[in-house]
Length: 266
Length: 262
Image (cartoon, rainbow over all chains, first blue to last red; front, side, top):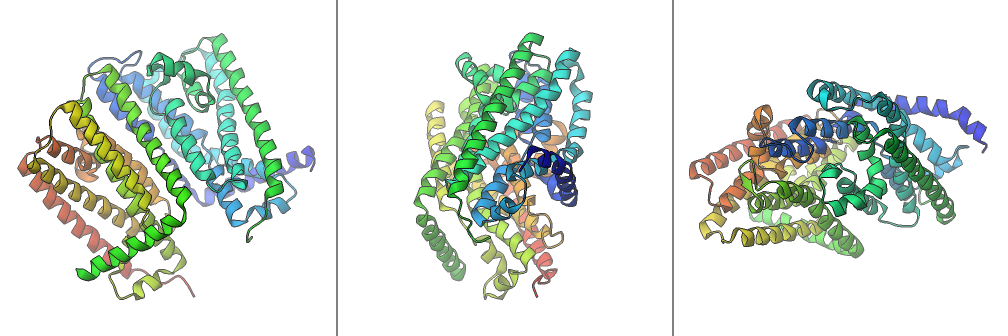
């Protein structure tokens, strides 16, 4: 299949994906509401900061951090790993393979098309963020400009990691367990539970170079105006290097795995 | 009552046999349970790296709350959720007929339909957390305190189960809510902190409306010997009333069930 045919089909796939997201809107919104860990962590840190700031964070600083975290997580979420492992197990992948478009492209369209629906939750969160902690957000317009490619990179990296682990279901029976383990480690090292700069130095040094940071903490840091302009550009470059690496890895694993695929049922 | 126990033990044996078929899964799930326990502990470690006391709780005291949280989460995800998720599926497909036809109470049957024995790892983990916390505290709880904690735990389990039954009852009215139970599971994460963490409206919600914070706080206070008998008695009465309400709601909703098949 040529790249041109794919480019032509993609808008139609996006429209279909959006229609599906609208059709299951109630379920979709409930899924997003279940992303509430940042608020639970905020409750704890707000209680801690009652007796004075922790590191660089006041009570309002924590509110800014965790609301940004929630916002990034809601906007850049994907679900492709669950869908892929299910479809590989049940044999539904065979149907996708018959279509004249790469299944991973089709998955990406479905997940990308749901992003506007995510606004239903994201816009109120953004409003609360602006109302509660506006003063703690970054002031540099350059960093806010970088936020667009950073958020897209975050979405892409999240999607590709999910697609990579989902593809591993072609080899492993317990690909979902592997993803659960990834989620657990990621929760700690991506800044989802605790801001990375509150960890001990040794942990920080490791966390800052691993890919987890670019799945969440990096865009949040931009929103809070933490890095300098130069450093932010370097980080953006690093993020997109990880995206490229994930893309190559997913492609390799997919190609090799497909040879092993024997459609069960279907 | 004997019948109830017979059904329960039969289902337990079936679940155990099913789980033993997938021995590798047992290991994998066990390892994951340990990982998630570590994930739950890390924020608390970071917090107490900066403070001695948070909202009136010291580190070992907070560990007691977390221990109860780990145990209750294991119960929720190992015993309550898997079974009740299948009820929603039954309602959607119309296969609840087969459950209703059986000569036993439907609520009992659906509540023990699927158990995941490997979540026992969570209980072991909770035990380790308790042992460590009491070593740090430098005391052992008296028999009375343990008994009180146990009573509070049973109350918490009953409330947890009743909330799940209420959520499932919604499936009879609105079919497309497969994931409401999942939403509740994620909201339950609130219970990892003691109730004094929450202020204002949240404190009211998590104490009176959805008593999640109390489920772990009261058993922990009981172990510390700080729970007043009057509070404990009040909590027990409220629990029984709530369980009765859930049972009534289930009875009413099941009457709305019209088989979806054929």
